[in-house]
Amino acid sequence: MRRLQKSTTQDMYQNINKIYHAVIYVRLSKEDGDISSSAKLESNSISNQKALILDFLKDKKDIEVVSVRVDDGYSGSNFERPAFQAMLEDMVSMIMRSSWYMTISLQIYRN
Image (spheres, rainbow, N blue to C red):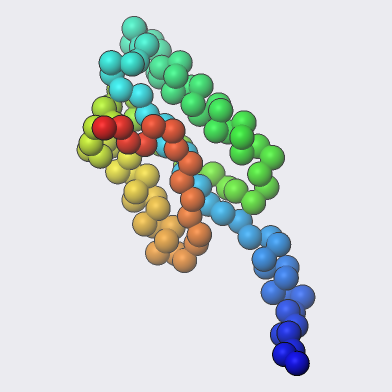
């Protein structure tokens, strides 16, 4: 008969209290945007995307948002977008620190 290995209390505690780090990335192309004046900082769609994601995350105690990256007015046909590149740098930095990383995104790429 095979014996099961007992987990220590510390092992169980670490599994229960794991925190995941996340970057929120949202994007809207110029063609779809609604910024008509320089007084408006971001389009309604960008604001709505961020609100939707943050609302989803509000009761997720194991997910910590480390940054919010926004590409408002950039096409999704390529990855040459400033906030997208910054998000990738955030992810590499976190991975280098041996943290688990998760990205929550809407419209990350479109062909």
